[in-house]
Image: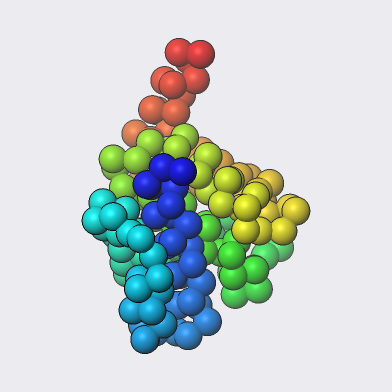
Length: 149
């Protein structure tokens, strides 16, 4: 498993705990004690978690705007945190291609979500990527990559 994939899994686990506890606590130090985290993987994990927490209100507004018949607080914790992390990558991590973000989010949903989670997450992230004006350059890069195929 690649270091960024592992980092995304760890970020999802940490974000899940933040949703449960509402704040940082001893659980976070215990989490890191149990993992053989190389510095690069830990840095990417912490970057993703910090970004999601910093922009959580905006991320939730975007999720709420593009989801049909779903309120963010009623979504399964796993799904909403995969969406938050995926959207954070799309909006604020220019070094991560959109296609990678979508593929990784779908894989997380298949592994940790229920049987419909991957379809839901793929649909919502695709819709945001297609319609959000701020994502024009990432959208263009996905189109350019598809043209090469």
